[in-house]
Length: 465
Ligand code: ADP
Ligand code: MG
Image (tube, rainbow, N blue to C red):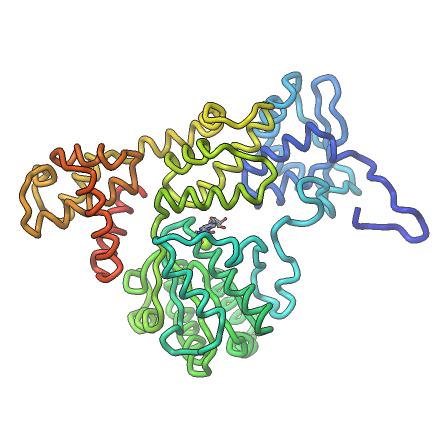
């Protein structure tokens, strides 16, 4: 425990968070609810005893108890029942010295695993950096290679080059934007010992409003304008309020003029950011703009393999292929599926195989299965380009139908679990090599032509991807 007492040997914990059943429940809850919720609430529970169908916990305050009871009691109970079917009731008592407050005693031990709590030592307002989000842990594929290369270049700070300032990373949710930003920050902090200020757009706004309220606008300006590297994540959440954007605009200009690096992420390209003033949008797009696309099957499999190589549980390749095939939405969901599978298998005490994966991930699989069909993709693409649905299967090779057809094939491969021959059949009995050619073509085009990229993003979004 992290509160050693003076002149006494370290005391064993009064209660036992190391109860193996509670450990299993914890692993499951962590995967189900995510690290944030787990660390905020469940980690504060101190396991006391399990007796006669009753599981007893201590917490250190009324507030924590009330919150857990009102929000998580059912989940806690059902998780326990999976491990120990005789459990009927959860009891949480308030004890002023419950250990959970200072040392959660579960999972990786004290504190929040994976989060570096010393990261904000240099600048009070910087957000914490996740220790797992490094370049080394980032798996590169076609969909993210541009963003990865640009991020590395910026992190090297070797040639403070106007063409990389700002670096603007954009892409859908869960595709690795925050990961790359943290990787840049880690690299710069460790290799260059520079002042990095990493925050979300929301935090920027919040600080600005506070500064106005407490009339410390000058300190605010000074702080922001003294950093070497300013990173703002999730820029789409910047307030539409003129004053905030104005302040950001000036901060931005002053840093760039001073050759400091700026890195921004958002879910859209600078041009498409709604509610952002034109002059700011054009500033944001004036450096290096790099997108991240949804991961292909190969990249999804690569990411799973890389995660598994860091885990102690071996997972058969067939199972990884199954997950990579069936979970297509984003990397966060993909990772969650893998963690859930491991927790589930240990909970039900079965070796990991395809059947167990199917059981563990049923709801996620349903989600992605009902998501899109090739037909709905064809319809949406035809609507977008104003061509007849019959052109998807027609032999016509005029440019105005070929392009939409290729884009529809590309999206069909990306958003459904159909094989290439299967997709070909649905486009007027075309050969799988034609589909492959279409996919490559669209990949190339979207690299060169921002308007095609924009079209694809819009279509994806409309299709719910
Ligand atoms: P975003 O900020 O774009 O919503 P994140 O950066 O938070 O997404 O990524 C979501 C999760 O997926 C994180 O755990 C991240 O480590 C992981 N991830 C995303 N892309 C990759 C990748 N290419 N290689 C390894 N992990 C990845
Ligand atoms: Mg993010």
